[in-house]
Image (cartoon, rainbow, N blue to C red; front, side, top):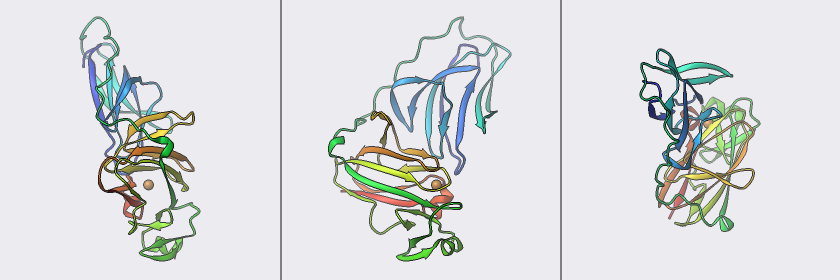
Length: 255
Ligand SMILES: [Cu+2]
């Protein structure tokens, strides 16, 4: 790269378990989209980005490192930075930095109206090692945690291990949904909804960016809202695929 050159970086966490905590060095930039959905305004990169399995981020970065230096996408592990991608800088694209980038054009149907009449849905994530789950239902039968471990099926959603016969929610097309998710386990999970994107309700009541995957840390309870605007049967599962394979899957129906 050259100094003052502008790049668009599309980051996709294609790992099946690792959460990447990403920072930049020798570059300055903005997040312009998350999970494929444009942000209303580019957000200057300050705090490191957290990307759970399956999460995506589109960045605009300007190379600030001098000619002869190296710019990096940095991966933070327990606070220690390591180069994930190195970009060698040779020469200069221009003498001055460019202006801040504009926002991307909006996609269709990005608003979440109807919050006052939203259908409440609850999801409790349980199981795994060092958890509190005593038992759960697998294939219609209640089993102890120990038996579930013996069968390699030990993650439960609302007390059921693996795909339930009935959907987590049966929704009418156009309905607004308020989904409260609790991670009652000792592990992080990247919960991924197919078919629709959601917005998280912040502590101050404002709506966050439109996403299709939420990375939840141990003990967290968080609430997302979305409009059921896509008819079909939609998987909702942990994007850590060993968790999904061991029971962390459910689904929603939109008719
Ligand atoms: Cu998980």
